[in-house]
Image 1 (tube, helix red, strand yellow):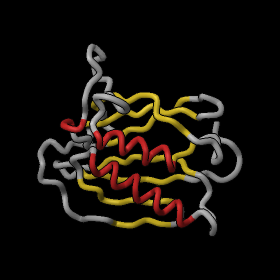
Image 2 (cartoon, helix red, strand yellow; image 1 turned 30 degrees about the horizontal axis):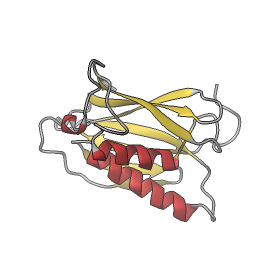
Image 3 (cartoon, one colour; image 1 turned 90 degrees about the vertical axis):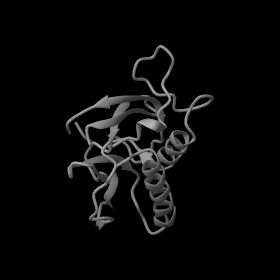
Image 4 (tube, helix red, strand yellow; image 1 turned 60 degrees about the vertical axis):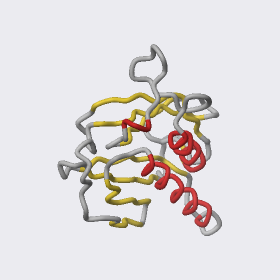
Length: 165
């Protein structure tokens, strides 16, 4: 059950080659007059890092109070499919509770897989694709948990999945 009070979320929507869309949503801290500059910088970095690991076209991004249409174009790369997703597991650094999000239209060429790990993706250290490492850095700088605006998060796993959502 979500906590009482405000929830602060951001959303990035991608289109695929069959003109379907899918979204990635993250929870972030409250945006105030003092924090908006840093938030916008970090949100921009997360958008850029996510673009670098996906094949789809970023169609929209939003945070509470703002919805911006970024493109009306559809990607031409037929591999850009909303069902082709990167499942990211992250956890609250205080409570260690885990959460997931999916990134649609992921670029398969940016994924280096854990040897013998099936669909598990290397996301840090030796063997990780630089664009994946950049995404993790951008995500961890801005994301919070659905349960707390204050608690930072850390990525603990990534897996390539196919999902129709």
